[in-house]
Length: 115
Length: 113
Image (cartoon, rainbow over all chains, first blue to last red; front, side, top):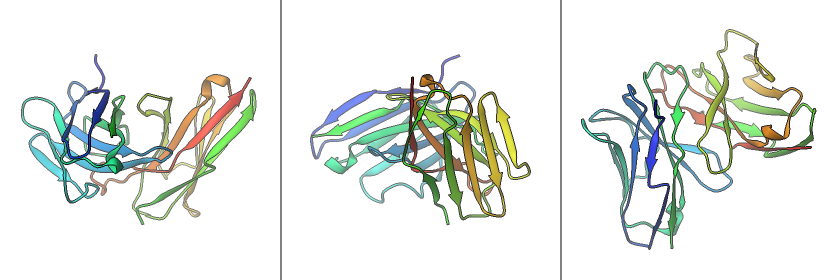
């Protein structure tokens, strides 16, 4: 029973390039959350998606960032025209329900470095 | 209102000691308070969680104490071991919060042999 799968684990981009981070939730989970972790900081909520719907994007920067969770395939977090400040670990989490039992299952993260 | 404040930022104890990590919240709509453990290079994993209708919950060597009136909760690790060395995050969520969790800033714990 595979856990939350994220790829790539490490990604290096130059300023101005695009970064695409992918997340496959646990089997049977239809709720996906993206969090960003800056060095020496906690996890900051970015966006919550269900299949084909964005439910809560209150933590997403207004520009350059977008997320999707299509009917088929993984959820994707897309960062356009990356800047050095985007360097961080991006974690995806999934849950089987939105009833907030609290247990989010996290992937191992995608670490983005912007040169 | 959506913040969760965690302290201390780092903690060093000897093996067998009882590290205590504290968290405080403001939003009274929160009704779920989990703790996550994160090892370097890994994702956070749920350790233990509590709801406000109980004041204490134990799972093995880990105990959450919850003070609803003070809007504070804490994690105690009994008989700490070097393998407990990790970063610990408290979090808060609510049924009205679309399922998302608000995390504290994290506490890096080192347990010396």
